[in-house]
Length: 262
Ligand SMILES: Nc1ncnc2c1ncn2[C@@H]1O[C@H](COP(=O)(O)OP(=O)(O)OP(=O)(O)O)[C@@H](O)[C@H]1O
Ligand SMILES: [Mg+2]
Image (cartoon, rainbow, N blue to C red; front, side, top):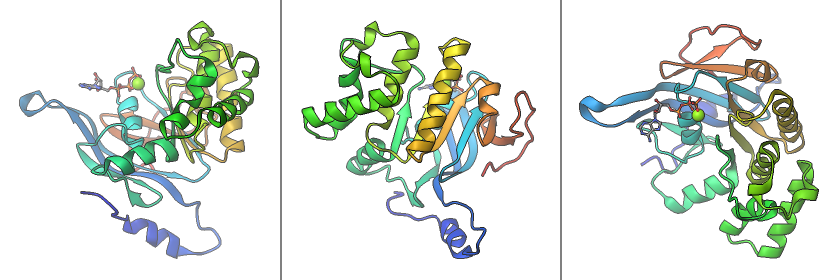
């Protein structure tokens, strides 16, 4: 279907060539739509989402509950299939009809932090973090070693052999962050990474994400309800009636309507 298709606009940008050429687009959504149900029961969630995430940027989506933030992040990570439109990674359409290519994309290109962090409660922190490496066939001992390195980066070296279910909410979120980064992705998608945390822990986790964004040279997109945290990101987007809009990057600022948020 979309296999191997390239987006002509990327070529135009690349050909632009002058000194002020913006960073390349890493992840892009064009005319993305998602509906649930069918016939008279069809419920459109995303109508026409356009988004171009440029290498190295950290952007936030701020929108009320039910607006479609998780739905959009899942589509961008190829965890779900759009009803219409296309997602491009490195200027190439994600091959939604090729299971092996999709699995590789999910496992290597994108780090995903789930809204409910989805850790395996009975497994240790290091086993949880190593899981994406084991899924892609790496050996147990080096996978665990890499997991411990990531846990040290998120400040949890001492907790590596604790069961995930015994960790605090903030610690579990750090484990989820380590797991999202263990495969060395270039893009981090984080679905309300501070949603369940008190204010102090929320800031600590956000500052950790900012640091990892820099040290791992990520391109990051966060969904959040927290306008103060979002305002620390380079770009703030709203999601209203299934359309993304650019918003002024200040806490509490109201959105300005616009079809394209790139
Ligand atoms: N599998 C599904 N089948 C039917 N409707 C769904 C499905 N998944 C999500 N929806 C609906 O899509 C809408 C958007 O859901 P989504 O989870 O993307 O919102 P959200 O912005 O992430 O909300 P929250 O801030 O509460 O996490 C909701 O009305 C939800 O009920
Ligand atoms: Mg959500």
